[in-house]
Image (cartoon, rainbow, N blue to C red; front, top):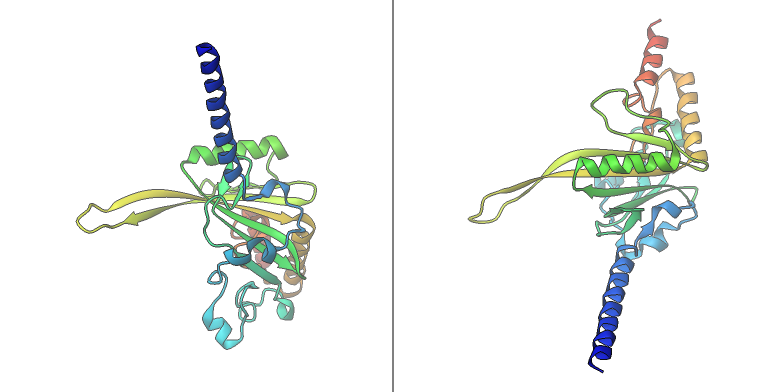
Length: 253
């Protein structure tokens, strides 16, 4: 009887631990699964009260009528990348919330949606990583999933990559920074922060932006890029040295 009681007790404890583990996993996975995006997402429905209204807004621009809240790019009337059609859409950023989204084993604390003609065309996600190793492993993970990157840095200073899939372009980049915590009577605590950005852009819509930039350059001989957080590096001369070289060669040949 005693042995039976111990077996039952062990079963109950195992069951409780398993339930606790399942509950933890459910909490961890409650955010938006970025791997399952289909560009039919509704930002206002997903974010609701989680929208950070201070991001992507410039009070001075709004006061002067250069752009309205959530307009993308901000101040499009001042920096007209596409003439009278420089307004592209709306960008909605979330507040910083732990595990608001995830991509396999990477968890993000902020996401943003870019819309064009009221349809989601891109999603941007931010994550704070513990080390370079996590970033490098994520690169390998995406290589296993999508193959060799279709665009990568041409210098040793940058650490970004882009993959082209059936319906999307995926870009990741990371930057180092530092945070400081100062407490009265305590030594200043400084720690390194590694922030990774992951941009998932609808492939068709990205190609349209590329085409607009190229056509505008052909007309004006001035290469203007749509500025902002949703910029794909492959068609930015500041990131694509080969593109910059071809522009300079055409100007000075």
